[in-house]
Length: 175
Image 1 (tube, one colour):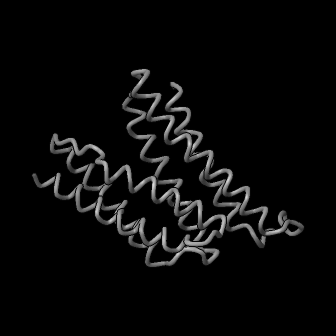
Image 2 (cartoon, one colour):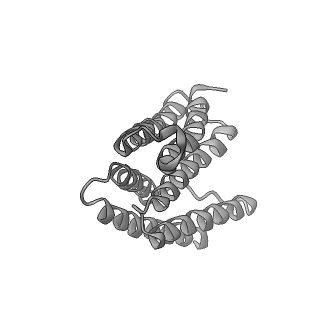
């Protein structure tokens, strides 16, 4: 297990803990806590996990530590982090159900498309739109966790970029 894979594994471990802080507002363990502290802890965990997303890819490429395991762990960790954030935010009524549905539907569809492409010997590399999608989603989720102004607008911007990047993947698959 190299450093990039360890960072992806850390992101996988952080996702359910962050979800716990988001949806645990009525749990007895948090009965004495102010809700804003749950947001702060969830936000801190989300920032740490998001930073590991950047560093695991950067280190893997620059130190030549790209592995088959890493090619599975990294997107899995990304999906788990986004899933935990979006579902948690939907449960606490900070993320619109339709926005979450559209983002997650695109993620499942494109993941399936990439599996089919690999089976056919095609490689659909992450595009600039795909990378932009991840960054905008992370910013939107961070703003929503902290309940900051314009968070909902950022979420819908993330939906638009997410859907467009999905279109780009589909176009690349058929070319």
